[in-house]
Length: 210
Image 1 (cartoon, helix red, strand yellow):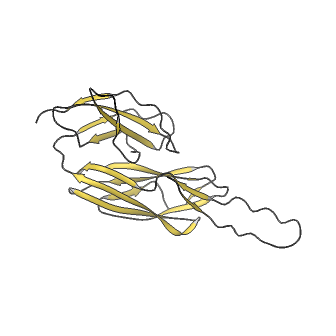
Image 2: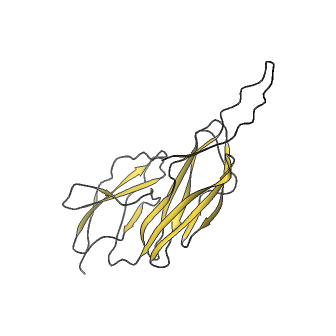
Image 3: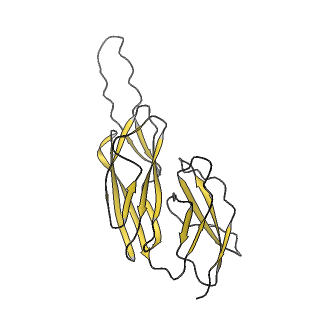
């Protein structure tokens, strides 16, 4: 889903020739309207990327305004970041729960496309897992905004996506695995327009008992 805000255009109107055409306005297009971290082990940190692009014809300036909610933090977008037409940037949003339970928050941004701050809802769930599996893969050689992580049983064929928003790290911890079960994990790189590349080679993990 795109969240699109357009800058207003001030153009002189009058009679006579020689009035230049107004340039196409700046357009801020956001490829994620929220960031959901799912289950995260207490004390662990998961970082996802929220990507936005200037799909208009004029530069725009964007700055982080504020972040709220227990355990949430941001980085990657400082004051006065300018996006020229056709360029994008990724806001890194992290969740580090200090206690079990659901957490909600938001991050607000301002830009020259609108006087009203852009608010991105944040959510996550802190858990104390009985079992967990951490796995990783080599970083993509192409420009990516993050990775999607998939799981299936070792005997099955159907993959389930674990993350709602692309994660920035090349390692991932699944806290919802069960004992005496074998799982396969795979990762797909995600480009700026949420386009996924091919699945990585699958990694198998067997959860011990108890």
